[in-house]
Image (cartoon, rainbow, N blue to C red; front, side):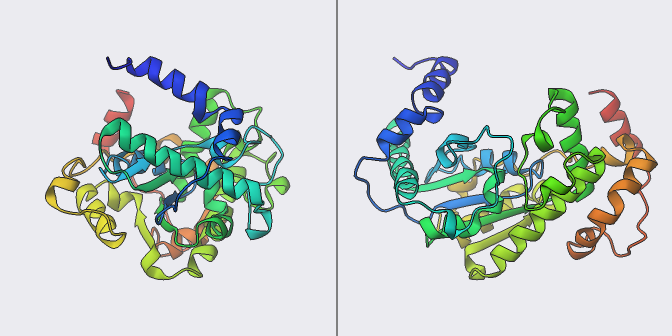
Length: 307
């Protein structure tokens, strides 16, 4: 008899997913090789959640996202540094991570009666840890999701407001080096600098990796060509990419980028401007430094008002 979904999730989180004792004990078990794990990177609120949820439905993948405590037993610490390099790798920490991933792939394969021999994970803090991940998984592959920084900042602040995270350091999102200088600034400045800092770090890290191990995609393109982009990703990373394999993906998704011009005041936009503009130009979101705010789309505005 199948355990009801809600009960199964509670059992999963309490007995393994967020249980430091279980994670440590599994780290002591012998384990086999992890074949080319795929890590989904991107700033918080960049669309990594929806991307990982869809991508993780592939029959060859074991998807463990977010996996907060799998990667960081001190995840809830409000002051620790999220930038990790090869110098931060410990012998048991690496063994703990590899062993848990290996046995999780075995668990998913048995539970779903498939050969889920590849692991995938989305954890925005790992966007700052590419050198650390490569030290543990030398053949790892990476998906980098890029989204318009203005939409990212507004989404971060919306989450902070709705979930009452104003008392948490940068709303508990990934903290790039230098966050101590601005985390108490105006939220639009703080989160704009946070987004820019994260993107600068991950771009530099990924530039040192062979291009065939990195798949970059803009959120704005992904929502329009969802299935086709998934097919290209699967083909590049050695996963089944036939029609049957990609049938689980929708053709397209809803565009969520229409909100920031209507929800942000002119003052808030100007506060963001100096911090987001360099990357908006580099990523092709704007062609000029003196970019203007797009006029609201009446249909999009009506949809927002009806939410």
